[in-house]
Image (cartoon, rainbow, N blue to C red; front, side, top):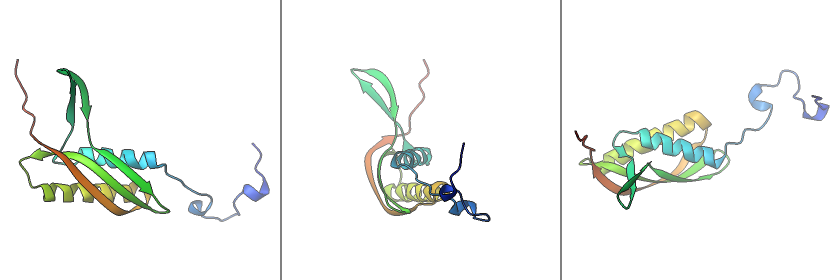
Length: 126
């Protein structure tokens, strides 16, 4: 591989200053969904069609990415009974902290829609 002089970094250049880092909005969305699904009080919903189980689905996020900021819209289901404002505050904190830690992006706007409340799943013995 040949490095052209105009593309090489000057000697002594800090690694963070040698180029640009772009993080896809898809990656940010997946981080948000993963962290939200792992938060206490959130639930994955079982998907069924005509009584047949098709797996489960967790939270759903949409993100808009700016220079070093991200706006998040998150839809999720929560465990019932429980304080909705407290559970959502914990999810917001976890997601905001992890997005900053993993990507360096600050969360500017974080809208949450609670799409369902479900009781704790009960294990059945057959």
